[in-house]
Length: 137
Image 1 (cartoon, rainbow, N blue to C red):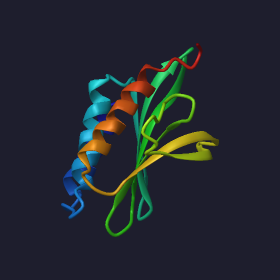
Image 2: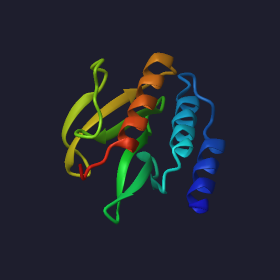
Image 3: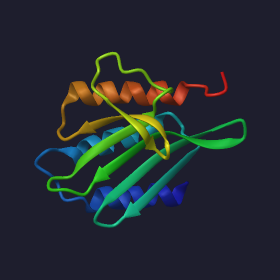
Image 4: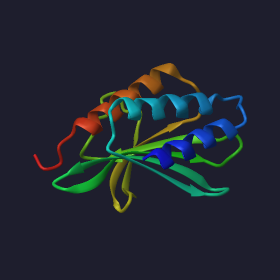
């Protein structure tokens, strides 16, 4: 996982500071994942389209994504933070239900286009919730 951390750190370091502070938000969400001791991190780059950070845990011997944070290459960049629909709640209704939207499964995605601390804290709570969800139960 050291390779992934190095790639992510390089991506953050090379990200020119943005007026909407999504770089700060991405870094905060990345740190949240690392505090949970995710077993795996994946970083998928589609140059000019998205940069996708995925936190994974192993359930029943199979690595499974519990959060996917996409940096959408737009002007300015913004974030789409997605979870499997059955693994998180959305009591405040900030998310968007996306049928088949997370690797072919139903998902809930939260679009973040600024450093809205209320939304960032809410999404951090969803990350913890998804990490603690046990799909086999």
